[in-house]
Image: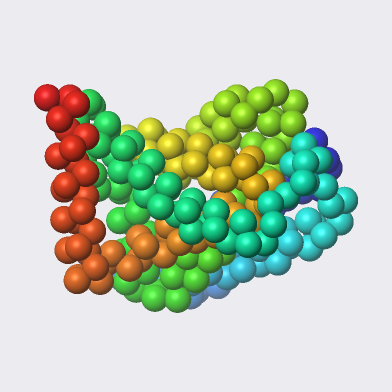
Amino acid sequence: MKKQYWYIILTYILVQVSAFPYFLIMKWLGFIQSPMTQTELSKLSGTWTIISFCIGLIIILLILRTVPKASLRNEAPASIGSAIAWIIGGFFLSLFAQSIAGAIEQYAFGIGRESENTQNILSIMDAVPWLVIVIALIGPILEEIIFRKIIFGVIYEKTNFFIGALASSVVFAAVHYDFPHILLYTAMGFTFAFLYAKTKRIIVPIGAHMLMNSLVVLVQIEPVKKMIEEQSQTMQMIIGGFFS
């Protein structure tokens, strides 16, 4: 694996764990007073998440600029028009994969639809609305660079699609710390890996991922939430029939 990729992975890890030293430093400087309310904690956490992810994105993009440009397996990437079409189609494919995985979790394993990880993030966003930038834009860019371009891409080059997609998707799922829904995250990882392998353009899974995360935010708006719930119930009834 290229040395630049190791630097990128290290940067991503530092972004993920940077909240701990940040809290210690802020407490040492006297900006954090104990005990803190949940709202104060959410504001502090959300603010640092925005700062750390923005810094991490800049560093990672600068490192990527030093990597010699080459398409996946040196195959011709999809045209711009085709890439745009796959971003849109990939979004709906992601919705379908998520619905199937969610239904299997619920009817085969009795796992509820609610994601603790998602709810925690949305609760922080209530305190820091600007966190939507990380959720809808920066997060998908970083995750697709790490899990699809680097982890999937490196393994795919040396083995095959299934091994590369499985390895990268399981790691992708584990990083979200939502193990009851590991099947759901793995299904999403497979979908994004397919989009990358199909088009040879990392912007395609990034775009589809952005649309998916934006939908997560939009469904919190009551009219949209009601419509999604009605569609989800219909899908669950259809899938649930296979397990009844």
